[in-house]
Length: 211
Image (cartoon, rainbow, N blue to C red):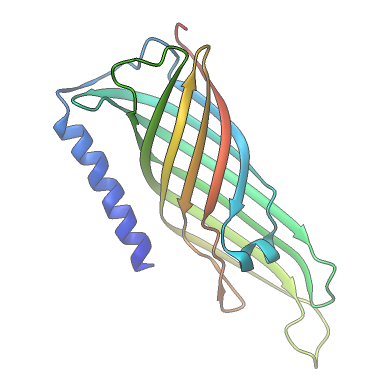
């Protein structure tokens, strides 16, 4: 948990430095695409134990809104984002039944233009960092005692700070793709922390502007 708070503090500092080091925060986004960003893709936990229990094929959805740009030596864009993923896995093992984990996140991200001179004509690479508040939910049904074969259900809900590191590319026409690594709060089930840190790969489309 200390590591998570450290990353969250670093992400907040990076956002603040971007805001105060830029010449100005513009109210409008880049004219090449709209401010509304819709994202869909998949989420993969990187911890082996989590993949075994939870599974790998998470459905991931995202919504973003560009709230402004920062002019400086390294142009940056600010985005308010909302993320969601969910996974339900039914185990065949006799001692484990149904396992569910889901995440809801709301936060702010900073995307830095990796090609500020615009030398690439058909796509614009970028990288960034974000942080937000996440609600993590986990629920598991299992047999916890050989003396009592009846399954027991335990659930946990955690609210905490999460952090994401991202790289992406904006294509002409409003299409973009993003690859993220997420560090998330960990709910506890049967005295075990559920490590859902992982990789998120999504494609998206930007609405609301001239292209």
